[in-house]
Image 1 (tube, rainbow, N blue to C red):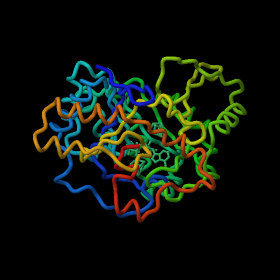
Image 2: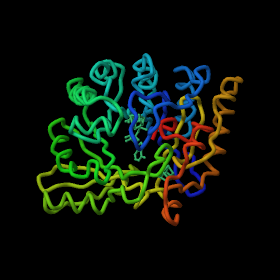
Image 3: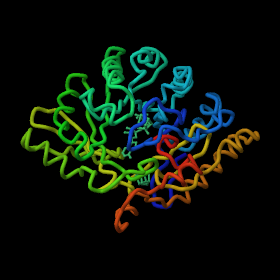
Image 4: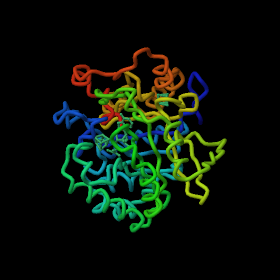
Length: 343
Ligand code: SAM
Ligand code: SF4
Ligand code: SF4
């Protein structure tokens, strides 16, 4: 069964946040040191997550991405991967990580059946890492070791995600592509978004898709867009003359809400239909009260059929655009945070 929302978009892609905790403090996501964390007794057990994923699979989801917070902080993550990888209807099981703990876990994740890994990496310079993440420059070496461990464990289809920020890392775009070639991994540049914990966001820090292409054309000459009509992926992909590909996720200046088939499950079982949504659907409550698979399916189907969210597109028309959220709001409801929703 395939469920379509109010704008005809299918329910096919689920991001599962396995924890809201993180070992970095990226300025665009977690600019504070301390946060209001989700209560531990409300965090879903793996069996609960796996059971909910089954209901989503019944309704047409075929791609799941594990995220967080930092997913590798969740103890025994390979066990969850094993439970999910055993589901034949799941075509794609991926994970997004900051890479810090990846060197020690890559092999076990591969053995458990994880298909693909995306690592977030904003700089190649260890000296820039502390300002970006509030963690020591030495941690950067752990991230690079984590990235190296991905192909060594046998993964292919690896991606590196970079948030491009003016005056921070916009001089590294071509270097990151060069680095990606050596991994090998496809680099995707993400426009800085004004969502969740990005309380210090401003439009002048956003390096737009157009600027990214301009800078890369200076170094590489002609850049050819790849035509991928069937793709609902947020990244537009491009090819350099030597065949190297890269992507741009223009969430801020050219959002792709019209084809968005993504929803998000938080570690405590709240389901969000848009990254910008202020309210979600509580699935933990019914699950723990013993709701049947059919009852959960009805709840999810009803939610998705009513979905008309186009959060990023609506932000385009905002005048004097500034951060979407203030720190006070985020403290009152941590579910509004990017690190709770899983990005
Ligand atoms: N901790 C993991 C990581 O960093 O890869 C997974 C969770 S993180 C919330 C997922 C992605 O969201 C990361 O690639 C991060 O760069 C991105 N992200 C967080 N805040 C962002 C913002 N304000 N604008 C654009 N991307 C953002
Ligand atoms: Fe950075 Fe990811 Fe942690 Fe957010 S959740 S602070 S993007 S590592
Ligand atoms: Fe999808 Fe909402 Fe992001 Fe638009 S803003 S692409 S609808 S999650």
